[in-house]
Length: 172
Image 1 (tube, rainbow, N blue to C red):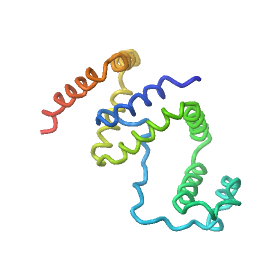
Image 2: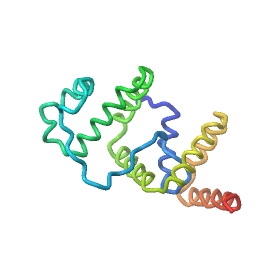
Image 3: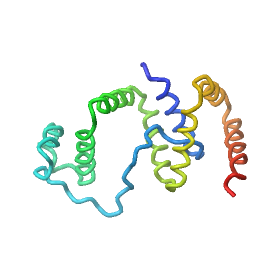
């Protein structure tokens, strides 16, 4: 399996999410969870391009839960609005995701939900941390990755605690 080093680190970063240390790879705007039940999306309400894109689901569309219909319609529209380069990147990320072991995908989904449960300020802080990390020279990022990966759980908690203590004076 060939996964870009950036993706490997991004996946590692998601492991740190629950500690509030950093952000997931995809810092794109995400719709908040719906508070009201979703209403069904009629197939006929989709644009011809969306219908073409989702054609494999046309026969079962009416049996899909309304939330799934809405997610597919929204995703189809996002796909149609992407440039060719963005679509190629999305395909690559999807292929990499599919190559991950099921346990790893499950863990990443859980951590993503934990991230989404954080306040917008916490999410933004995590995104800012990721941007700062990504702005470091590659050699420094690799050193930090190796340090984190070789640390025991207790050492990792100590690193997180020290980071929080260093940042506490800045928050006042």
